[in-house]
Image (cartoon, rainbow, N blue to C red):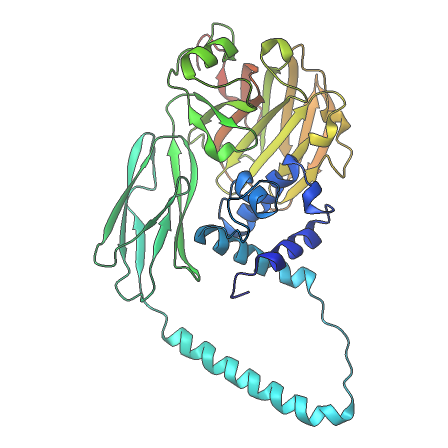
Length: 408
């Protein structure tokens, strides 16, 4: 799809996911669409942007058009849908048309080959490298580039915030990474992606912060990184969040705690144990949920528990496998979190196992390896508590723990 045709792209997406009419989609659908686009293209679009595109949010003009970066991401995603959505019809043309169609097809194929070879020969040379793609946050990543042979305007997106135009007469650009995480940096023109690089920003300790409802890419650190480190658990008290951090508790938000570190252990073969609590008395909201993300250098595990009777909003993503509570029975992940919830993850032989109080409640096989563990993230709708975290390797040897009094 060379041109941006918004209505056609929306139709393709609706047909692909078969979620019904897009004007009836919920926040959950837009979160999953965001994940699907990022997994397929590497480009991150916010749920709010997708809601504006599908008419779930008011826009200032009648003929709304997304920004250029959003257009390019949607075009790439739409292109990936064509193989599964467009089927060739078995058409048998009348004999009188064969003499016309066959020569036209031959001419078209020859033209395509000539254009392809010509474009390949004209492919400009360029370089785009990062001197320090892995470091401890906060830090400045330095990128060297040479795009002098590229005739089009060239842009770079560093994995968050906004895109930057690259002047062809320059050869260096710096980006400041202040939040731990894994970022995909993309070099592109308005018509195609030229290169991509992965940036890993490690942290020396756990950090806490918050993000608006279902918009984890807008994660912001608490200004005070000490108040949630209570004597027995991690917990950001709502009163402190309001008074010291200036967050309006009337707005839906998540609190989150994250640690990114080179654990040097396989995410495909480990056991993790933890205790969590999230209820109305601690500052949570209707259909509150508690989730966790384990980040590997090749894939992620992302799942969430939800309040009893709210299993429709539960979800699970393990590597290349995704299960939604909308069209699957995830009632086992709808639990009472008013008291402490003891859960365990056992990952082995490309199978994810989730246990509550040592009872298996869900299994999911996957195909693509996750790689080494590099990040642990907990998130709570509203504000919840985290305690007693332990991680074991494939030999059941403890390699990381946090007892919330003394880190080991």
